[in-house]
Amino acid sequence: MPHSNITPKTRDTAKCLRRELTKAEAAMWDMLRDLRPYGARFRRETPIGPYIADFAWLSARIIVEVDGDSHETAAGRRHDFARDAFLRDQGLHAAPFLKERAA
Image 1 (cartoon, helix red, strand yellow):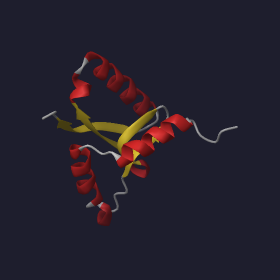
Image 2 (cartoon, rainbow, N blue to C red):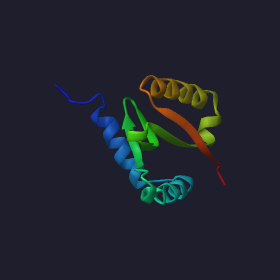
Image 3 (cartoon, rainbow, N blue to C red):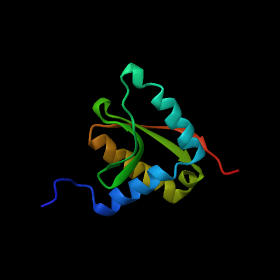
Image 4 (cartoon, rainbow, N blue to C red):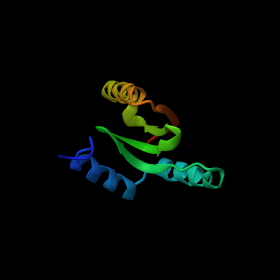
């Protein structure tokens, strides 16, 4: 019996996403790492249930999402709404932080 509600496919996807950060995600990661001396322990591309949070500080129950153009579509908004509802149900606070635009 698996010890987690995270599928192997989701874990593999998260691992791939950690290797391929967008420019906005890389910039956000640099900022969040600078908070480590103050106790912040963010993780990149963290699986949470069926979703992958861009950045998660699990002990503080904070999720930071870097949303790009794909989130501006109807399907993207539906996905974000479902993701945010799931995260709230888990006791996590998700906040979109930065909009990344295609060049």
